[in-house]
Each structure stands twice: as C-alpha cells, then as structure tokens.
Amino acid sequence: MVNKKNPADGGREARVYPLENQGGKPKAGGESSRGPFTGRPDQKPAGNTGYGALRGIGKPAGPVSPVKVPGAAPGAESLLFGAGRLREGIRLFRMKRYDIALKELAQVDGTGFSGEENAELAYYLGLCHTKLGHYEEALLYLDQVVASGKNVLRSYQCRMTLSYIYVITGKHKMAEFELMRLQKSGFESTQLYTTLAYIAWTKKNIRGALNCYERVLEMDENNTTAMNGLGYILVETNSDLVRGLRLCRRAVDRKPQNAVYMDSLGWAYFKNGDITGARTWLRKALDLTSQEKEIQDHWRVVTGEEPPRGK
Image 1 (tube, one colour):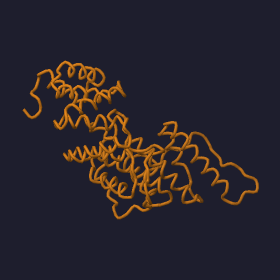
Image 2: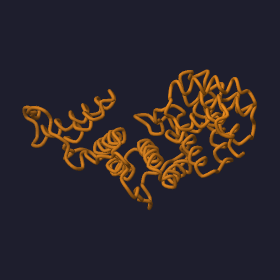
Image 3: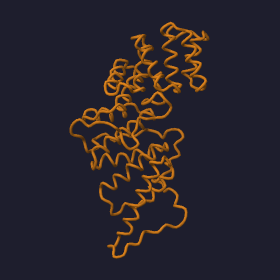
Image 4: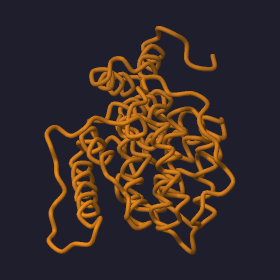
C-alpha cells in the first residue's frame, strides 16, 4: 500500500518533514531566497484551531523576571532573558513537549537578536506549529526562515517542511514546486524522493513514482518506505509481481509490527496467487488496524466478498 495518509513512511507517523536534521545532502551551492512563489492553501485544514503565537499564546504561569547583570548595557538583560527563553523553548521541543515549547517561544522578545537568532526562533516556532497542526501559522514562520537566507541548510529543511504541509493539506502542486526547487538546487534526501514518489502516485504517474522509489533505494538500500512503496506499486500495476512480493517481504521483515506493510505484503501474495499467504498477512494487518479502509477493501477482495479490482 502506498499510504495516502503518510507519504513519507509506510507507518502511521508522518516523517516527511525534519525535526532538527533533515539528513539531506546539498551537492553544490544553494538558494537563499524564497523566490516568486508565495502561494498559500486556500482553506484551513479541518481541525486546525488556529491559535498560536500570531494570536497571542498564554502567559507563563507565575511571574518571570529578567536576569540582573551588574554593569550590563541597557537592553542587555532583556536580550539575555530572550535568549534564555529561546534555549528553553528549543529544549522543550526536543523533548517533544510541543505545546509547552510553543508557549515558551511565543514569549520570546527578539528585539536585539541577530538575524541568525531571529531565524532560529522562527524555525522552531514553525516546527512547533507544524507538529500541533497549525499549518497556516507554520507557513508564515517557515517562509521567514527561507526568505532570510541566513542559513542554507535551514532553508532546505524549511522547504521540506513546507512540502509536507502542502501534501497533507492536499496542495500537491505546491508541494511538488518546493521539492523540485530543492532538487534543482542540488539537495538530495530520501525524504525528498519518497515525497515526490507519493505525489507522482497520486497523479497516476506510475513511472515517476517507480523512478523516485528506485532512487531512494540507491541512496539507502534499507529504506523501508521505499521497499514498501515500490513493492506495492509493482504488484498493484502488475509490473513485476515477483520483485514486488520480495520488496514487501523485506519491509515487513525490517518492521514486523507495521500494519500498512503487512497489508502490502498480503496484497502482494494475493497478486501472486497465494491466497493463504494473503489471508494470513491481511488478517494480521486488520488485527492491528481494523479501521483502515484500504486494508478492509483488500480483505474483502481476498475473501471473495467483492470482485478483484478491474474485474
């Protein structure tokens, strides 16, 4: 199964966007500006409450005072206080306490910060909003980082995060634009190509999806996302049933508790004519994720409750 809920990974955790380190490789040069494209999603994603730093997030519990520094220049205490809050927000983010981290970061007064420090603040605000599903706010902050041009790698990371937001809000053309800009600038990562593969699949560009997954496996032969995605497409399109089954089997071997990989393997067995194997793995997938519609559909086909696709 090519997981429509999560283009970058066959599991249920979204991994398209970076959390600190994208792991990509800028091959040469790099871009430092946002360029002419400034599009935004037309509508707010369902469930987005829209609160956050842009609308004023709650004040800290209890009084907090700047650190007194004897002999410090005017404004130095406030600057140190802001820098301390920034460090604390980053620490909380790394602990995955995203809501508390956002509250802390939203209190930071960046007056007197260097351009690099303000970009760092915007970067973590953007990631916190992304993690919490506040996508409109996230877009604004991430755009600031890209436009600042202060850190090329940060710009790459933010473009990946932007592409993630566009994918999960159904703005695939915008996501593809971001990813192609990255690719043209010389940046490469497995996440970039798995996301491009997913977008190609949604556009029914089978060859494009296969090529992107193949590229991922060239970069990382143990990438289970690419194993599962490539294997599923090969069997779903009857392109190479034997290789597709082998790849799906490898993905399950590496992540034996992943219901989506089990579903892909069960479907691969079915497409190869092994009904017993298909039932075994689809049953295991359903036991782990009984509400997943595509797994239910596969199970009904394999058990004869509905005809196979295309028949």
